[in-house]
Image (cartoon, rainbow, N blue to C red; front, side):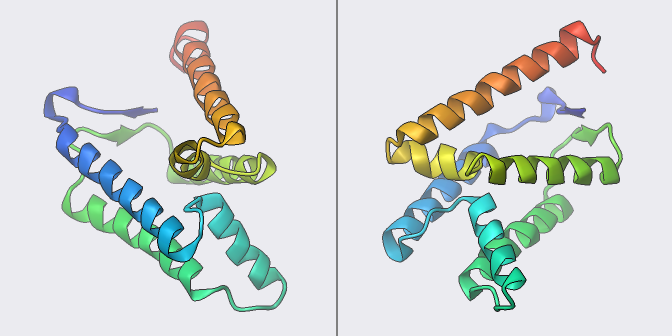
Length: 149
């Protein structure tokens, strides 16, 4: 389980990060006509590779930026008191399962939540309500019914 030492939490970086995500999603939509949904971008690149094509450069830059920015942030500005209670292979397996679910559900939180809600998409509103609702149910079950497993 992920936990944060709230005594050292600074919301300024979260607000800045959210603003940067919103600005980049808006720029991608306005300038390139693309939706900044990570599962769609990754799935598109994977589909291109499976067809024997080179992935479009913008897809590689977008995905590479996500990975590089994450590693740089962890190296230079780790979240104080943040700890993962599971092994990295288990976290990676969970990520793959989530990735499969986002493709099955035709989108992820970034595409539906950031871009779809901004466009008032009914499908995105339903998807985000489902994401949040299931997250609340999962948290309740894990913390209260299974005793904090």
